[in-house]
Amino acid sequence: MSEKNREGKRTARERLAVEREKQKASERRRRTLIVAASVVCVLGLAAVIGVVAANAGKDHESESSGPVVAPSGAQGKDALAIPVGKDGAKSTLTVWEDFRCPACKAFETAYRSTIHELTDAGKLKAEYHLATLIDGNMGGSGSRAAANAGACAQDAGKFTAYHDVLYDNQPEETDDAYSSKAKLIELAGKVPGLVTPSFRTCVENGTHDSWVAKSQAAFRSGGFTGTPTVLLNGKNIYQDRTMTPAKLKQLVEQGDQNQG
Image 1 (spheres, helix red, strand yellow):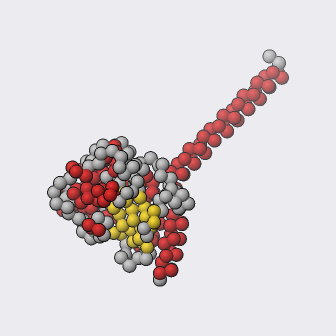
Image 2 (tube, helix red, strand yellow):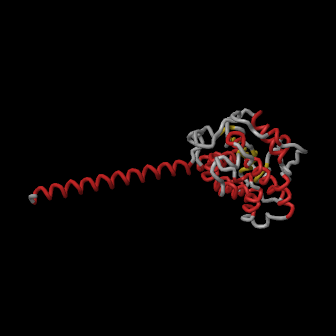
Image 3 (cartoon, rainbow, N blue to C red):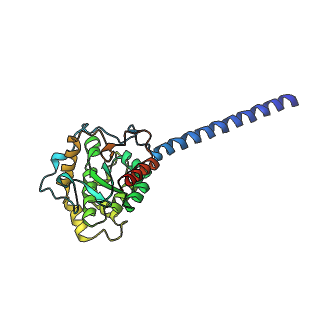
């Protein structure tokens, strides 16, 4: 083989290697963009996996019996809202969520620090309503058990911290890991001072199960389309494709100034 032919083949191999590297780089960029889009979680992207129709599937409202025991400090109609922040805040963020819902976790990932900042500053009051949509659509009882455990944490004055732990450790949507009360108590160990005999009893006995069922019924009757449903002063901002944590902060601070 002539030197010229060898050189030509070498050049062709080098071009092929360069092209492969370009393709690999392009694929890495594509994957990065997909991950980034998931983390940013622009509120209007209701197609994110885990957003489920409120009237789809069989829910578990009827499976909870016994007295309706609202968690300590619950507010609003039928005491179905768990409040976070100061009552005097000028803006109210209403969140309907399901601890098994991946889209709810995506919302938390993107907006948690902003919500904490605004509630801690007294500019925003958050009201959390717990739903059990994934139980109805995917089967199982993890949504209900986790919601009950969240209400038990509210009784102990540690709802926010435990709420965050549940999302940080959320299992796959098809994995009903949160149906294990032992698992929920184990995760509570990540919140200092939460695991007490009263908390264990509350989780194991499903003290707030009927309250959770009533909250789910309110979600269905409210005509909402899925979780998370996020309302700022009554306006559904989850449907706003331009919404970002920075925009949410701006809206809340403007409202605080206008009403100050």
